[in-house]
Length: 588
Image 1: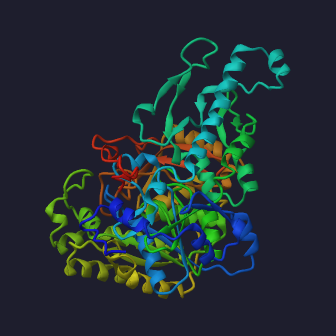
Image 2: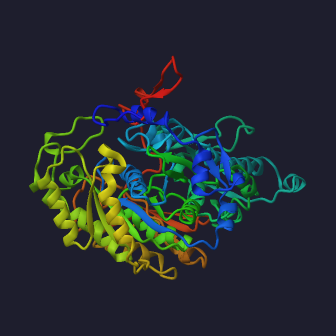
Image 3: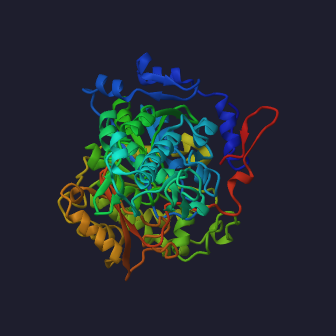
């Protein structure tokens, strides 16, 4: 393959060039030692893996080293966690290590909006890019259909109960659920950023056109069904969880679940294939598992437990990605995902960029779709120094867990040596190892320093511990996350949140569940405009959602939406198909 130059080529052009030299899934399967029936091909270059067979066959094999990738508080452009995950995997591969990555499947929302796909970038990408970015093997479609089937079941039951008496319901073998239309726990899902659908009215028309009520949409990847895919450990576990989803409350305040609606089994049937992790590869041919979804600000935002369990059995090093900064992505990995999986990570890689540190130091606003201010491409070590507190906050969060932190400076070719040394000095002074990685520009070759540092850190045993215990009250869990991870002075609760917390505390099962915070990813605080390491502030919790099936409650902090909006200069304006070859162009 000819030398590829990411400074002269778009990501999709690099991916297209590399795809001509991809390994087939059969070659990847052979390298991984998979048996023939454990590989479930979707064409030549994408497959699903039969997790059940693999985990049973390799149950006595020791796990490999478990490496998590997180970041500092990002700019709106992102700081390259997926790129670093791919680069580190390629770097470990170049050092002769048997390595597998696990990343999350991109949502169509950001793919067609501002941020683009989540395949990485430059010479550190997951391929085939088009398959990865545009639906893959249908997992998100399955989640969308399963979630919406629950709403179909709920709204149709409401219509029938409104139109028919108990005698007719009894003939249909239906009991009256008496759902309160003003007290729904969920709405509908769509995998686009469709702000016009956040709040809607449904059922307009005659009595056969449904029950008239307020409703709304959230983006598919924020659905509890996606959370269940991320944390389920088997199809039996998924089936049990799927039946516990709280759809609404009845007029007496009792939960109405998918089990009450008798729809959990059908939802699981829609998800039966999606539970198997997807197999793709890096630009340099290392196997990459793609499973579960993004958005750690409004969801759990982790690659799946099953992907990690499979990767740890098949490789000596397994690199998994968490969403956004360590305040939300790593915190959920630490206190939710590891609690559910029973797995202990060896290393957490904290991705930082000079660009983001300059922003936290008071640099000009970084706005998607607009050129960067020269402050971000010229050397300003004093601006980096002013923003370094944000990095230190994330190092301290990882160290609280007992996991070994490695700071990876995702190097841009405009970064100066003086700026890099500011970051190195601060990272090492805060108790983290440090590496510069040029994977975007040079691929695995540019990530060898990072790979060596990760290998060294993984050789030390972590002193892993959770931030909170299951039996602690919900407010205590929220306040620990707010004060010890975000740096808040305390927490305030709206009357709605207070009422829902009392309901959680009165439920023996719910009160022992984990806490999955919803908070902006653009600040350590709840306010996306506040950068650096804010002090003297209080976290406002506005609402608390119930994810009984996934196994956690979801406090909502600040003004954040479960359905993002599409910007005026969206990516779909540049995505097209080459009419001569039929290949998709313009993805990034």
